[in-house]
Length: 509
View (cartoon, rainbow, N blue to C red):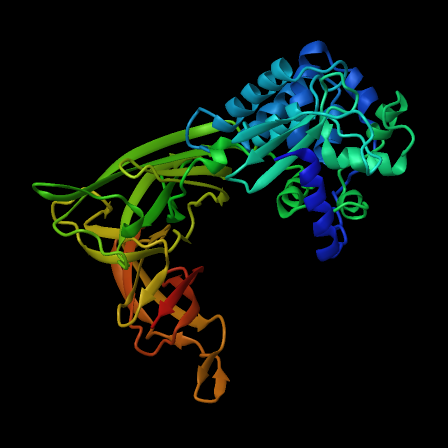
């Protein structure tokens, strides 16, 4: 592909494609426009080299925040938290995205050097943002005027097949430094008589990457070019940690129970669709294996704990493509109450799929008075017998974090009661009541109607000890397809104190 022919194609596209208004840039909270370079010059040599590459991952607010920190130690801590928040494998100590980024920065500095800030030309920027291109074509230049009274500059065209994107560059100063082609065109439009003068650098520095510059030129872009400038406008970097991993679907939740002194027991519950896993056949049947990793970080992104577990699966028959079967797993963690950011990974050992999830969760302390655990939805609850997995006392409670039940399967759930008052013989007396409310209306013939509360008969019971575990089942016969809210209320009959927990579930026809 020749650069001149590509321009001709792009100009033809101009006649067929209407101009688009640039999307407004999202407002950044508490951001004040600032001059980046004086703040950059205050950094020491090491920090300058770090910031030159890191700035491509920052928005303007983050740049302002980082550069205005008063000390290097504060900036070092800021960078540490920045990377921890962007770790693609948050349950491990290796940050693949950071390693990839730093490798690209060094490559850009070595292969496409440029005097002055940031230390590389636009090819280096593209390398840092998007990684190695799938193909590079060198474009020879023609510095003589052609019939269209324009100069054909030497350059390169980079192609990214996975991203559906092409990036053209031109060496406008004939000094080996390349700039983005469309940015050059825009500068030419504003400064038509200064294309090859020293003032061109000032013209280029005056440009930005806004969509208005791209779409308001007397120049059209192919979809591949438009995608490139859309990514550039969004300040996006694409890493192999993102594009080279096949995601694995996983459903999960976290339920909280009382732990040891000053601790809570946080159970990370998972369900993985059978069709997501790769089963391998041998003489004994079909087998699969997946690994679950979880890590918790405090408010300063310091790792508090980490745990992992391997789960082996066996079947006599292959998994049908339309299988709805879900494989459960659970990690039991003992941790202090507090606000945590969690990282969860699920890795299919045979198929290579990798599920990666980050979420935040506040773990409230469970006090000494009357209180309830979270409601743990279950796919089955039965006596534990000799099993070791999913055991709670004398019960085997298999978690169901999807919280969806297909009729006529009953809704099963488990919870624990703490802090019941006891008599002299150590017996507690309490009552349990639950109610179910529909979260939206459903159609009954031509009418949209919302179910009223479905209240079970309130029942009273007694048991030995101030801590009790309870299992309940709800018949789904009278529940329509949709989402519901479950309220569980416990009253201590000795003190008349009450406590309530709320959870959500769904019914499928």
